[in-house]
Amino acid sequence: MRFTLLRMAKQMLSLESAVRETRFPANYRPRLLVTCSDIPTSYIDTLRSKCDVTVCEGVNRDEILQGVPGAEGILWLTADRLDEEVLDRAGPQLRVVSTMTSGMDYVDAKVFGERGIALGHTPQVVNNPVADIAVGLMLAAARRFHEGRVAILEDRWEQRPQWMLGQDVVGATVGIVGFGGIGQTIAKRLRGFDVGRLIYTGHGEKVEAKEFGASFVGFDELLRDSDFVFVVCPLTSETKNLFNAEAFKKMKPTSVLVNVARGGIVDQPALVEALKKGIIFAAGLDVMTPEPLPPSDPLMTLPNCIVVPHLGTATRQSLEDMFCITARNVLSVLAGGCLVAPFKK
Image 1 (cartoon, one colour):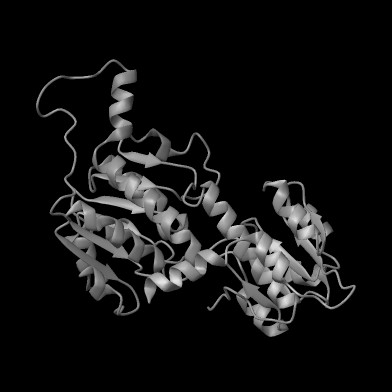
Image 2 (cartoon, rainbow, N blue to C red):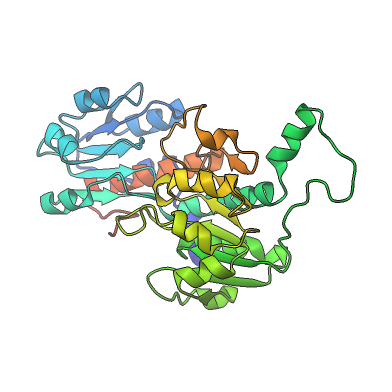
């Protein structure tokens, strides 16, 4: 059943087929706004075959606010705040907005519900690329890739048995904070690494956990027992600064933290101190606060911190898949149907 659903999802991802199959009333060309131009022009050309499309050249909020009046559907391709101001500026004809993200912490979803405006996003298509980069960060941090490269650049390569020892993945206990689609895909990736124990925490037990042999535990137990901790939960008022100084003190000094969710889930100054003082062994971050991160940020001075610039979904296939789902969400609603991937708070 699962593989059938995956095949069906793949079949849905062709933008050309989505536009071709969409049926609007005669002579109706819906007005769309695409909030960023940094996508292949073929995508826009395909939409323009049936819609009147306005494209914002940059990612400047003022430009978006100038372009949004009159739009019936919006393809929101930035991480700028999507709130009441945008909806007010758009006008009462706005029927649907879809983001090109899975996480929705920058969206005021409540106001969409109050106004009856459909809100979509792109949840499942991000699972594979984000899980891939999470595992990559795990290995890079555990095996000291960055620190080793710096040692070469500074002519400090030592040829002795105990130089630059890292942490083993085989037999390790891996903790996943948030066991949704991305967390489960990480668990799937880790099957080939012969980890010893897989544990997770969140609001409650997941039936899918049985497939991976994963055990539900409390947050403190996960911190205490894990050799590797993956952060893949949403950023909410509950999870903001969840990983703070007290949390780091509960972790093993040999543990590795990997964050591919949102920077705000980690108290960054506390993380810097934990890495400097050896309270934890290393960290791998695809997300941080702020973004973009200033080159002078303390994180960039730490040899035991792998930092990459929010590359989780930055693959060609992911971009195409995410844009296709975003477009399908908007086109479906404007044609009188339902969202393909509705956001459910």
